[in-house]
Image (cartoon, rainbow, N blue to C red; front, side, top):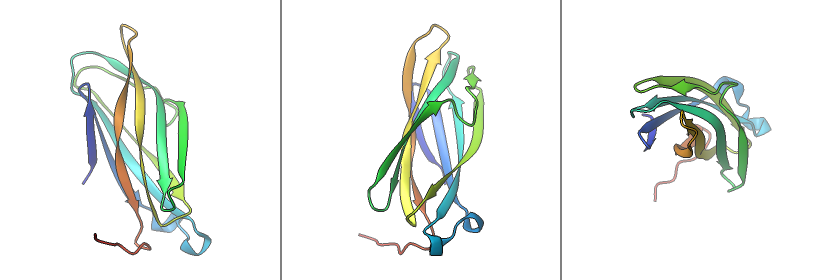
Length: 131
């Protein structure tokens, strides 16, 4: 089930996927892929210019990752269009979470940030606690 956030009629859906074959718990290496879909539900064309991720491990250590575009692209989305990509995240702990923002720009030059929903990174090597 994807994590979803909508800002200014731009919907961002994220689905994390645990990668057992890339992970090595004995070496404190835990790896996930995440699939992102960005959909323009509004009436104006927008372009994704940059990203800001906040990646937090199970110890509470937060890493900020900033850069242009996503996976080497700065997609333009007209009304009703969508863009999908897959990327990955390694951690040294068996769980954590990610979230952040994408910086968008309109055809008129207005910039604004949209929310990337915070999503959980959970490996089968982490004991689940229910409060």
